Image (cartoon, rainbow, N blue to C red; front, side):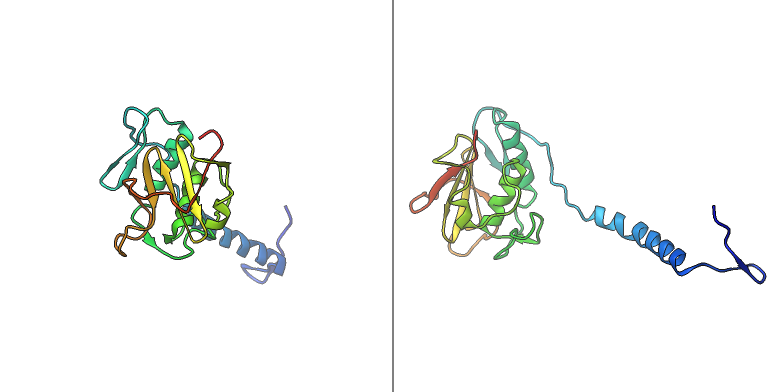
Length: 187
């Protein structure tokens, strides 16, 4: 260990490099825990219902026990963003946003199913995965809007007549007319 030169009584002289190193360590100690604390972690487990169809309970989707684990994890995670505000472009630059639009919500779902690395707009979701409806997850996309049917329950941001906007689980009453149906491989 290098000797620190002494100047006078009890006064220690530090080089600029040593001062910078100490400041860097202090900043790292202060900022890294805050950055790590800011990482959001939606639930990876939760309740299930018997069979192959999901149910909505108090606005949250309960996936079926027979669904693949990736589908269940996607549902449990998506429950985390349900009831957030509708924000145009929300969820496009990050999966964790203050609010979500339609494709941001669907991207969140697909990311937590392990099949999407980065958020995608509605236009890109028209070419996502495999063509046609899936057994567990189907994405319906067109230019300007997208929604998903997951185990028989719809994830959508439009509630109709301007009410209840934002990511919500809803009864599947929306028809797919004008939308392209796609699904993740194997789902």
